[in-house]
Amino acid sequence: MKNSWKEECGVFGIWNHPEAAKLTYLGLYAMQHRGQESAGIVSLDTQTAGQPIHRIHKSLGLVADAFSEATLAKLTGSVAIGHVRYSTTGDNSVVNAQPLTSELLTGPLAVAHNGNIVNSSTLRTALQRDGAIFQATSDTEILLHLLAKHPSNDLVSALTEVLKNLVGAYSFVILARDRLVALRDPLGFRPLVLGQMKSGSGLCYVVASETCALDLIGAQLVREIEPGEIVEISSEGIKSSRFSDGTQSTRKSANCVFEHVYFSRPDSVVFGKSVYDSRKKFGVKLAEESPIDADIVIPVPDSGVPAAIGYSQKSGIPFEFGIIRNHYIGRTFIQPAQSVRDVGVKIKLNPQTEILKDKRVVVIDDSLVRGTTSQKIIALIRQAGAKEVHLRIASPPTTGPCYYGVDTPQKSELIASEHSLEDIRKHIGADTLAYLSEDGMWKALNSGPERFCAACFNGEYPTSLKGVETKKTTDQKDKSQAKQI
Ligand code: SF4
Image (cartoon, rainbow, N blue to C red; front, top):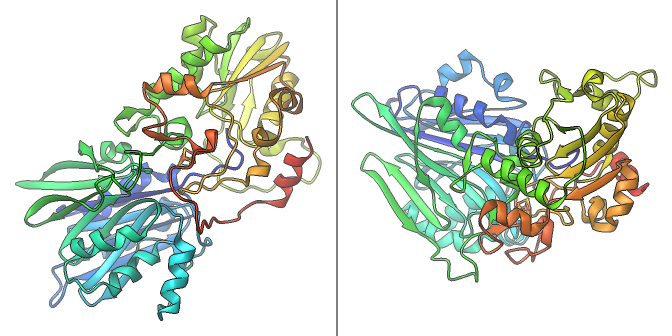
């Protein structure tokens, strides 16, 4: 369980549904795990006299808090896009909440983005030198400025040209006055899928970061939007074109493997694979690579659950919920000064003495970033009476930061980047510690580094990092804890 890797963003779009804004709200609700800082919806109202206009509501906070019946009722129209945000570039203020909107010569445009544009700082400076005035600090606004400057009146022609300037990860959903556009960067770092459902006598099209959003509203998955593809949905139907044929890179794709390790919901199908199935197979491989004599296998809930099931099934060691997670806590709570030790972890995770007492326990977690949370969890399991605690991590050691839309600590704060396995084991207080090997991860996925980005594990960044800019969110307290090892 991460104490410092934050989910990225989630995007959603819907075309031709009388309750477009409400279904967008539900789609965002299903993808709340992808961003909890802000939520926003823009609908396209074509009924009002005159030009079509965008109706907007954005707010900081969770989806359920950001919208009410009254705000959703104002988002009229049969087309809408939405966004949940965790900021990776740009601070967490409402001006950076998405979708971003603008009035261009060609009409209103709204943009929702998942990912991170690596060369945003260079592009922003060039645009500012050219007279552009930015409203916000996020990298997403760059696309609006590039489109505003482009001479073409046709959105897709303009996109085909301007996207060639962007380096990095982007899944965009764009709402113009007469069409909905969805596209993915040439390497397809972040997921984006197309779905459909019936709407009256016609068809309603949906795009979403994850299939769990389609499931909730009853839409069927049609296919992934391909890397380098632009899908245009309008009253004329669906059109697909490409702005990149993949020849700019030596590789065909760089799907983020961490979507399968941790970010995506286990009930989603991401990059054509069930996330639950991948995580279970990571656990199976981990049991093959790093077996241990033990009495029970327990997950760090919730993200460690599928891998723990896989480890248990392969090893034959019984699976138990040795730690119970409280699902009803918010992001902050009032903490007593000294009287209750480890309340920060305990308020979320409560070890079960009846299950753990006198047992040799294998604990399965999805990843190990700084080690501070693992150290606390292991101490709590020992306090509950466990005889031995063996930590197994269902992914390789995380040794590098992400520049593609995931907020990560700096390299020096990633425990595996600067310390040996034995040092980490001692620091967290486990009897034994083992990670899934990179080779084991590829075997579990039945794939390899030619298809997936695994840069945070192997340091092989799939794009140039020139002009790289990330949000520095590092909290000094965590920093000192990580350095204490
Ligand atoms: S660096 Fe890691 S988190 Fe970032 S895109 Fe690559 S695999 Fe995903």
